[in-house]
Length: 452
Image (cartoon, rainbow, N blue to C red):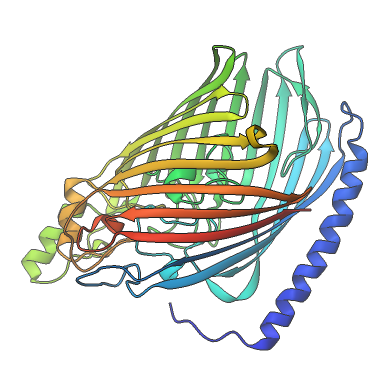
């Protein structure tokens, strides 16, 4: 992606747009808050907002060669900023309409390539110097009560405050992210407030339907009964792997299902989730691409051998509170490694184990420390493809001396005010993009996040 210098007028325009959004979001937030002062009150509408800036850098590191999708071995510093306005309206007692407007700007490190477990969930696959507006979410949510016991819903992003039945059926339809509903985790899921790495905030091998920003069209149904929830959905895949979604078209799709069991262990809340998915679309087998390349005396290219096929996977997601303000989590996932990644990233097996600790122990109750270790693995077929010089979504060094991609991430998030947090993040990466000939890499980050 060609970079160009950002002109002064772009900076002025960006600052003006951010200021206007802050004023609008602040006004809306006050009105919504006034509605919800009484705990049992039901919000009829809400406006919320957020601003997040993430700046990351890594120094130069050892590398015997570099390819099209390599992390820059000379070192790099990049930043991303996004401003989001969340607008919600209650159409009836059990029906909500939400539309999110967002302004984005910036680039991920090396234009968001070079690691399968990419280091910033705030970096998208498309970057721009100039701020641009998009609508990541526009959806309807309908809830049916299935019992008498009630629970209070606090006002939140994309959630109107109010009361609903604990046992319920909820259907969401429109444009949103698969991971808004599936594969969530209390301690590791939101790059604006907790961990940043892609293979921590989501299960690494969960190749979920998404455009370059992580959103798509779909329908999801959630049934909650007692301590269990069942979720299922169908979502639109891109026209080609890692392509843009510009219109509603379910000729290629993902099916996903998840079961969640809530429980108490030693009076501490825990959740266990089991997820399965299957993508149906025109995709390539890695060995088909390798065989065709060997016959032609060329570099393998998945685009030349795509055909309609299924690609499935599984993810296990566990979280457990172990003490007041302290929790641990585990993510383990795997997918069909014989075919190319369709939407997310080149990870065929992944294991992440981590913990998060609130600052109550050092008189900073709103601060958080988190640490996690990740191991990402490529299948034998994928190794062959990349060893022969193949290029993928995020990786492709023109060769491969294979080793597991191993990541350790730690962050400290400090509350600076009622609505403002500042986080310091560090990631140590061994074998970036599974290549023993490159790295290790130290990645340092600062994150400023405000909710309005």
